[in-house]
Image 1 (spheres, helix red, strand yellow):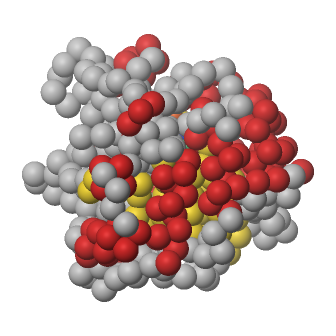
Image 2 (cartoon, helix red, strand yellow):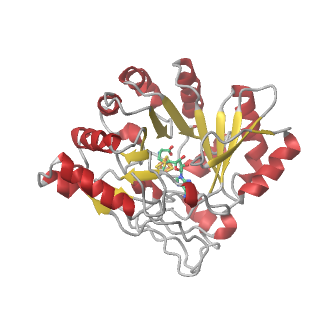
Length: 346
Ligand code: SAM
Ligand code: SF4
């Protein structure tokens, strides 16, 4: 599938729920710690960010069969990389059954999941047996107090346990995402990299994007990728890795003497839209052609009114053609999407 800017789409991110058991400061900032952080920095000088959110009702969610049907159609059109995400995907009951359905499509070359890791231990073996290849966990801090501020939950022990368990199950490489926010966890950049070095992890530092449900994001909360890199270079003799394909979002480095890999994802300060090969499906069956799309394309209603596979495939092609050339963060008139990262699927 090629869009009108000449990009070939291969990567589909599927959100299976918008619910979450965490309240990350950069995603669902509904905790006292989040309000304290944003208070005073809030652009409109309001006392606290407004939260207007309700979970999607179950009947509106795509069923596993509906998702798997779409995966089959998308694979026939060239998608070969699938990532299951959310919200917190492990909150979706019997998720391993969906993983098995997706894995059964021969076109799926890479099947990964992103999770906060809190309840991974209860599901790990079933997910592995169902055919999950890889997993990414979110880990923004190694200090229990900061972890709680960042996620709204006392879960550091569980997430560290999940990282070890994923490795033991052979879900390699285990990846870890850390969103860095100035004035919160930016002091932990070297410690997180050192943890990755010691545990041979693939760590990704991610710039904070304007996708929080409170719309409290401010540019000065972003620690630019270049600054993260300069800091890391003071502590580690980083060696650059060659990009394995042009659509890679992370610039990557190795730490000599370790299997760890450090990546920096800088969508705000160094956008990579020109090579973006991703498509997203929300839990309620809307196709999104960009994280920052302001329009969505309704797959669910087409499926539920009985459209054929051929017709859905044609709809997918038409939708892909409309993929935006780039996001407009930082430009006058930039509009944050109505839905937050927890609904869109990261
Ligand atoms: N709940 C799972 C988790 O946190 O790993 C999966 C969904 S979460 C939306 C997927 C990824 O998006 C996480 O790694 C999270 O850190 C990242 N994310 C969420 N909000 C973000 C934001 N405003 N800017 C940058 N990354 C964000
Ligand atoms: Fe939940 Fe993931 Fe969003 Fe955190 S980033 S609130 S874990 S969906």
